[in-house]
Image (cartoon, rainbow, N blue to C red; front, side, top):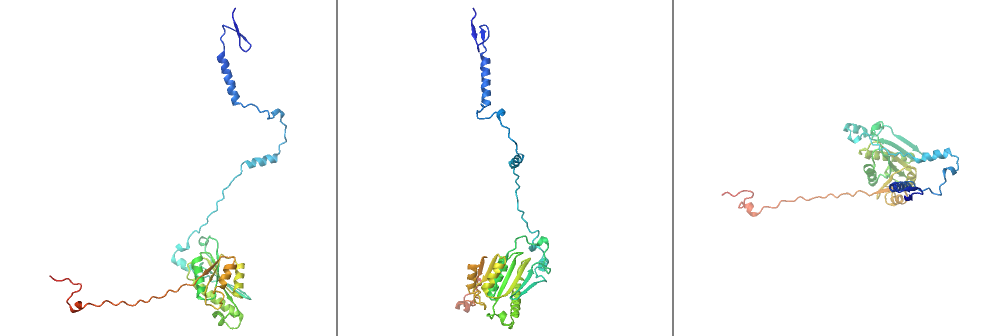
Length: 312
């Protein structure tokens, strides 16, 4: 009797080949497929059991638009002056470095304001290619016509100012003052203001005329009132970058440059304040002439020859 074997509950005869290789190969394939395909999670709802939800079109559009937010890099353009006035011909610069023919004069009961434009030719206008592109800066200088205050004006023009800036020069006029600008003006108050205004404008223009500055504004003020009140009002009213004042002046407004006003400005001014010290006068050194050393007796007698070779 031929023995029989079973494989998967199926009888096979002895003469039949036992399909072990095929069985093991099928098992390996099933294991690989099970590794590649993850086992279904019991927490996942099947598609047949999913509840149909109403789609919100507005929400969908907002969600899709938020997936990609466009970003544009904003680069601030740097604007440079097309041409430099200092590189131009001397004749062109000489024609531009003058005060404009037109000046603006504002007269009020307690003040006279004169505005000049310098460094833009007689017409007071520069072409677009020559105009400064930087932001304008404004400076205020207090003046009492003393050498120290004149030095403060000159220092501001020569050190701080650049093309396109603005300078305010103010002189306070008090009835109790006996300044040189007021002494010769007579009793009329209007004449006093006119006299001080003319003088401060002339002095400021004289200093500005020596500067290599283009397209700048020069505004002079002659105002009646206490020095502290006048300066405080202008500092509050004007848009300033810096306030400049001198110290130890000898003018008639004694409080202006003796330290009290400069100290007041440093403590109370909302704008940065620069106090300019007076220039130190250099002492002239007089040198005495040096006399030549006298000749010795041997040279005088002729026994010793100087700068001569002895003859053999």
